[in-house]
Image 1 (cartoon, rainbow, N blue to C red):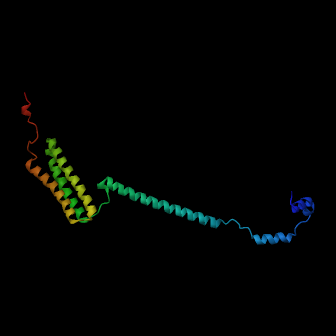
Image 2 (image 1 turned 180 degrees about the vertical axis):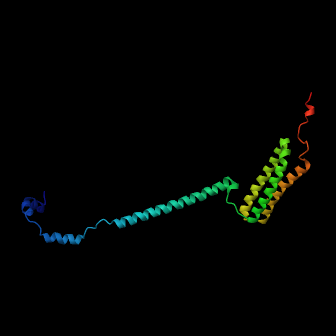
Image 3 (image 1 turned 90 degrees about the vertical axis):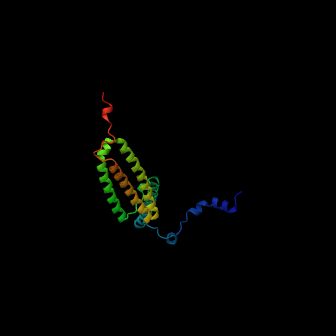
Length: 187
């Protein structure tokens, strides 16, 4: 049940094939389609450079944020390693008191050689004072150069010096403190 048109086309197919269209018709069709565009390397390279720049900036921003987070985590885990505030007067005072403490420790060396228990006690006292010092440094960072915190840090150094001076007064380097009496062991 072919349609009449289909039946006519199939019966007269040979007659349709011998007519070629005019070449001018194909030229008009090509003009209406437009010219083919050639591949433009400059545009492609500019686009690729833009993508690379966006990628590089994104990577750098990611690294920057990652490092900031790591610094914050380090400061939380290790309070003494955080961002430290530099106060010139405090630095001078720390250098001064550290020098005095080192001098007093040098004076104490002969006494501590004779008495290891005294050295242990001194280390224990100093470790407590050092932990207080670290807390004060954290407070100083939080309170941004609070005068009371600075004074407490200086007082911490003074207390170390007082401890050393009291020990030196009590125990003279020439005394026989802590040296075991050998006469008790003789036969």
